[in-house]
Image (cartoon, rainbow, N blue to C red; front, side, top):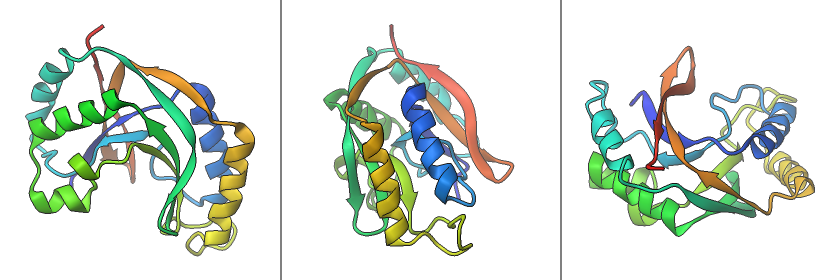
Length: 180
């Protein structure tokens, strides 16, 4: 298992709202609210890819993303939709630098399979109320709470984070800025 992924932390209002919803339902989060920009595949322990990543990001201007309500991956993952052509382009630039295997491309939903989002809950997460996996009903309850927060907004992306798995959770490890 890779110990890294690359993500974007949403603004504090979205971050706090998602975190509060998760606190009501999840026994353990494992990672803070974020947009996964590049999944674990190809991010090796030697960290040589970090310099290549910095080099690419120095050529990319900051940009805005739109947050557009909720959606599901099947009946298993509730997420908040995030959209920007620039975000998709940034993902593809990073994907081209890292060059994971074709099998990992599908496994981690990368390149043309990439769907920018902020995960709110998954049926594979442990429920706070039952110590079993989250039910679809609990995901629907979480969705109702998200809708009450009215997540129709935009925000600017000017940096991202390399996350590293340590102390049983993914934590912010290295901040990398875009060109300003």
